[in-house]
Length: 335
Image (cartoon, rainbow, N blue to C red):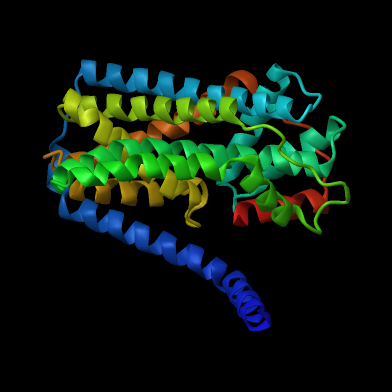
C-alpha cells in the first residue's frame, strides 16, 4: 500500500509539472488539425453561399443558444437553493452571466473563483461555495454523457450490426446516475476541498440532485438544437439523423469541456466534432461543409455568451480578492 501511495503521489506531481506543456501540446495539435483540414478543403469552403433563409436559421440558433446560457444560469441559481445560499434567483443569474466569460481567461478557473467569491459574500462558507460551484460542471458533464450515450449508442449499434450493444446503453446511463449520488459525490468534493478551506466543518450534498440534472440536460439539448439549426442552414438535415447528431454534438462539447486545452474548449470541440462526424456520423456531408458548420457554431456560441452579459451582466461584480478562493477554484478545474 505504501508503494502504491508513493507511486500515486509521484505521478500526481509529474502531472502537475507537465500539465502546462500538455495544454499547449493539445492546443498545437488541434490547431494543426483544423488548419490542415481547412487547407485541404479550401475550395469547397469558398464555394459555400448562404441565402436569406439560411441566415434566418443561424439567427434562430443564436436566440436559442442565448436562452440556453441564461437557462444554465437559472439552473445554477437552483443549485444554490439546495445549499440554502442567500442569493435571489435573479441575482444568481446575473452573477453567473457576469462570470461566464472569465472561463476564456488563462487558467480556466476565474469563472469558478468569481462565483465562489459572491457566494461567500452572501454569508455562506467556502465549503458551501466550493460545493455549489463544483456541482454545476459535474452535472453538466453528466447530462452531456447521458445524451451522448443515447445518441451515439443507438447509432453505433446500428452501424456495427450488433443489437447487443444497445444493452450497454442502460448500463451507461445507470453508471452516470449512480456517480452523482451523494454517496459517491461527497467523497469527491471532500477530496477537492480538503486542506483548502478555512471552515473545518464538512459540507455534504444531502439530496439527489435530480432537478438540476434535468436542468443541465435541458441546457445541453438547447445547445444541440442550435447545432441542428446551423446544420440545416449548411447541409440537408433528415429526422433520422437527429439522435446521432445530438449525440455527436454532446460528445464533442464534453471533450471541449473537460480536455485541458484552450480556454472555453476552443479547438478541442471543433476537432472532436469533425472526427466524430466523419467516422461514426455517416452524414455524407463534405468535409468543407463540416468545417463551415463548426466555425459558424463557434461564432454563434460566442455571440450567445456575449448577449446575456449585455442584457443581465453589464455591471461588473464587486469581488474581494481571496487566495483561498483561488486555490479551491484551481482544484475544481483540475478535478
